[in-house]
Image (cartoon, rainbow, N blue to C red; front, side, top):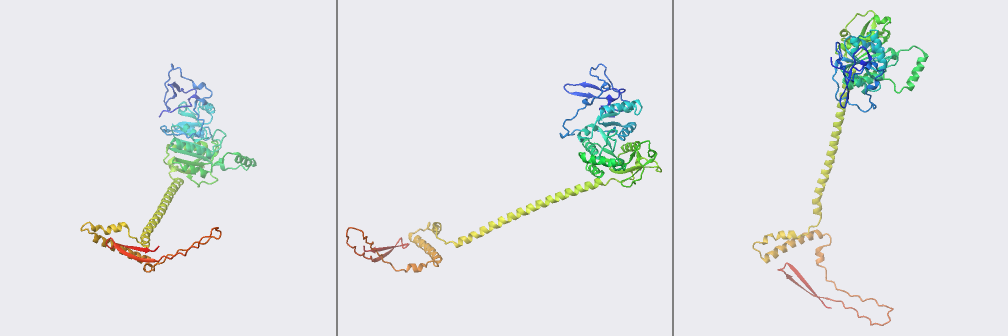
Length: 495
């Protein structure tokens, strides 16, 4: 059996006590190995050997987190012991019976209790009245655990590989109820702690029954009015379970006391929804025995929801025979399929959005390319519409052949022909505007000089100016220069 920290050893004065050893600078606890026939070697010469049986309450020795929402990380989990079971609500009416039978079958039990002092007294009574033996007490490990948050419960689970919780009245102590909301905390803690299998006992008699008492209705009304949160329905609770990756067995039943007549009947395990409303109740010790049998063969009861009731005519069957005919719960399969479908739809939606963005970008790029092509096609039209004037470059291109066999006459004739050709092209372009031929044939005009007006306020009498003579244009002399390339025109005016 793997070594475990037996924090409940102080509860039983008949058992050997763990010893504390101090190491610089940490404070560590050295504990015995749990299991039958395991003896703890003590050193009487150790000055730090304490007798925890004399302490009335050692709750202060248990480390407690002041911030439960600090985001505790369980990165390195303890190695799980297949023979260790954590019982949530071990002081409950069904929980204490489950813990007792687990010890009797050889399991090590981590009993989650809310009050270690009360657990101390309970253990002493159990030893005194031989409810549990000395050997069983060595495998009982009481740990402080409430249903407040999953992180503290995960610490209490420790190295347990299996967890059991009972939902119903009187399951968190003799009189306090464990609700479905409390059980969800245990499920989440089991997920954090890496537990292999979880068994849930759901007592339907404590949730749906009615005593037809008016006070019950008033009490229920005020409890719902002032409660912080409403308990989950069984369907909502099951949904919380299937959303984890835990292996589970949910047992729906209606519990009764062990001294009732029904407790002597044989139990029947049926599929969900097959038990009638008039089915016999099941004794608490009987349901505890069924839970222990499930833990002995979790494979046959894995991921199943069953209804358990008593039947006086039912034959006795093993746990394999009881659970082998029960089909596996289809909720987890439906949940997994829904997750896969949602993931596929999300991926398809993402692909469609990406394709849509690519199409939009392609359209934008196509518009830019069309605009650029239109701009390029428009440039030749603009060049064609603008008048072409001979440039110096074009004239120099015409004169490229003058390097060899150069003569002034040849150069003049080539240059003249180029200019005339350019003028002809220009005449064609501007003829429609002003008529170049008409402009050449216009007659010469005479210059007329006008006399300035007379100032009537002038004191001096001036002679009237003689009328200006109109200058007549004299003969015009024209001659060609630069070998006929240019024409010089000289006008003589008689002044």
